[in-house]
Image 1 (tube, one colour):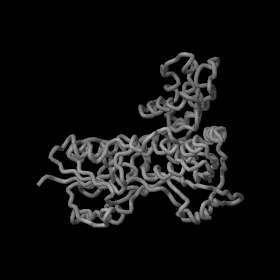
Image 2: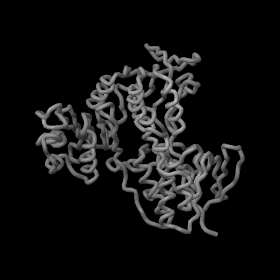
Image 3: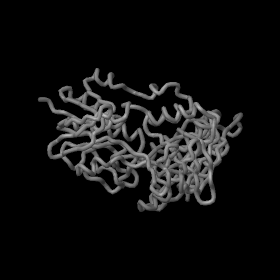
Image 4: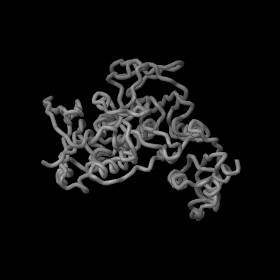
Length: 448
């Protein structure tokens, strides 16, 4: 009998692991279970489908179950793993279409359950019928159907990436948009104040009514409308979308006895192996190591899910691959304003034991005299004692955001701020000044 790999969760991490294991182990039997109707899809593209930039939901699907079947990977959608028995090496799977359950044995288990949206208990009515989240493609389809019936008034609860991208999508659809975030500014978890304030300005300039330091305490269902309330405000909405972040989906792991780490996600080593023999984990539900701080983090990014899934697939197929860590590099936009970040924020750097200093530069994406030169700001964070680069953030017009990759590469390579200040970057007036703002911010951090 061939060995069997059972994959719990059929999105980025799970199917990356399955695909890599198939490449390396043609003899391995691979069975994947996914409780939604889609596998291997781009959750990051969902707001752009709601906004109409992506014409069909199928465009967000990288591979269908039929395409995986052609590679001898058996995929079952609308099938939920309800229990894992580590002693018997079995999972119990419930078919969500007919409610029948079956037991499936495994030699290797890939735990890739992803994340779950946070729904705080202190917000009354948060699970009401007029309150929506955005996680699965089914969520995107439902929100698109509602957006098509508009325009109306949507209240977005939370100022993270989902909030930013849904705000853009709904403004583009002609809806009135109010965003309420408890933070001092949007993207507070990933941007320091000077950059967060610029992100706020971009949100407001796009037409969003932005309420900061506004904690929502209740959502009251009034049939066709919802009343969203907090201290000092009350909003009447046709639609409420919750974007308060997400956490690892670990209930199955806890019940089975798969150990968690300090972040509350599944604890794994750099091979994506748990402490249970034959059990692997990757993606949003698993911990990874931050490359700068060295600390375990739970990083909910599609890039991380695909990479760690590939590492797990290599190793469960008897290979030897090590995941080198993460920086948390991320990018989004609000209209023509691009927002990106990498590495540690100032407060996070202090917590990790560094003595952070910053270099801030403000100017334009292209040469200042270039027609319609759009504004840009760059922040570089370094350690006062060693000069080591710790993080960076960028907010600016078209062409600004992907500059973060330069800072990420420099951090990855262990460079200092002084070294980054002299890196030979491309220059021509349509693209940058002769001294790029990254150069200037890095030099100021080195001199701080």
